[in-house]
Length: 112
Image (cartoon, rainbow, N blue to C red):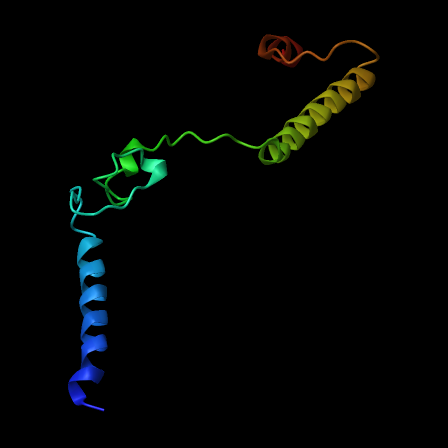
C-alpha cells in the first residue's frame, strides 16, 4: 500500500474540518454567499446563510410564560391576603367588634 494513498484521505478530511471551522468562526458574522445551506428558521434566501450570533438581535426576546411559573406568586399573594384578613379579624374581635383604628391622630389623643 503506497504512502500517498494513506495520507490522501486524511488530508482531505483535515481540509474539510478546517474549512468548516473557518466558515463558522465567532468573529465572522457576515453572510457567506458561496454556501448552499438554507436555515429555515432564519428565513434567508437559499444562496446565503448567517451564523446564529448575527441574527441574535432579530429574535423576539418575549417568550410566553407557562401558568405553572406563576403558581408560586399566586400562592404568595393568597397567603398574604389570608394573613392580612386574619389579622384584621383578630384586631376587630379584640376591639369588641369595632373596626381597628390605625390613625396616628387617635393615638395622640389617647396618650394625652
